[in-house]
Image 1 (cartoon, rainbow, N blue to C red):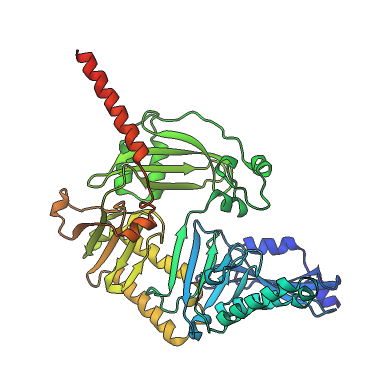
Image 2: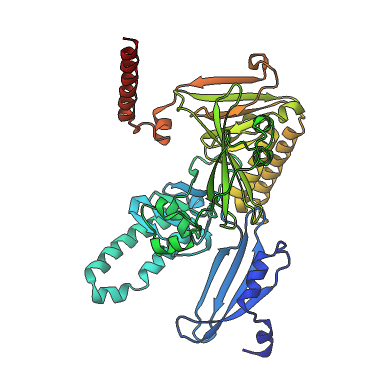
Length: 507
């Protein structure tokens, strides 16, 4: 290497510092001398930190060996791990080339599955790739073919089976056979393009889910070993026990009462809920238990408070704060039994007072705005406590995050005009230039929009409709396989014993 290249080379620490910087604009190109795994001579790896518009910070790395010509590149996410995992399911019909040309971002923690072929690309393969559906299948085909000549000499039977499988995989990659393309990422940093966005794509299904303890451990989070039934590859129980801190107990503080907490839950944002919960916490009303901070992994406390919201139901408010890093979080969960029917809530928004209405959206609720032809499936945004205006703002942010490159400068003029028109219509909604409707459809009836009148019956802009859940909805919620016969028998038995005891006392 010449002198100019030597001056450009830096250590890895500088790259890490660039990643952690708040402003990635104008990031320089870094060069690091690294070992070539083919010829074992030194090559050059170039790093570039860049920000994809409305998507993520990514670190692009490209290796080039001048001795043997070996080259490879990789995309790594330099931003944060998302709160939930994501699973994209794309139905690809035969002969549709546009479907094969859809852009795909596969993070280093994502797996790709094709159920029709019983084929899976693990997280370790094609790490951090930016490609298309066709490109990912072609690359998988090339990697399987790489050692076929050697396999035919050592194990002809296995090589023949792989050749037969490659014919099926090539048929999928060329569009001759229909297949299902599933992209599952526990980190939530993967993406499949939706050319119809912001409208839903009939061929693309997106689901967000809570990570299992095993997935949390593989992503580097601290996990209680007792929660892991099956420990993932490379994560042993001893290693997890060594990094899980011992919980520390502290005495409760304050005994002012929970009246302010009631008001905050009914009328305030989630940040104010957390603030009130930690200023007013009476031992007889608020339960405290040790937990771990999700930001810095230090020991902290979580407080739980049960209250009844008028015209709604009993809810459980959980709030956490970390003294070490200042991280704060609050969450609201429904209490009580599962309702027999689902609920659909419609609100006609006419003025600023309607935008300020409190909204509780559970993670099983879908949101739709008919005037925008916009519909978000259940699981999108998770469970939130916000206002009508805040809900629309969160929807806009979620669309920019989920649809990634569809907002970038690579978008064609037609699609760019479509997105500009959608954003303009969204702005008109929040500026109340016309009346519009927001609909919350919750199969578990755990969502709520607050009335603006003392009696909910006098609020004519707000309507509630109950409906019978379909078999498919019960199946998605896990209710079809739920067996409560043992619990019902135990409950009836305890009631009979109590009744027998009371009768005996009377005699």
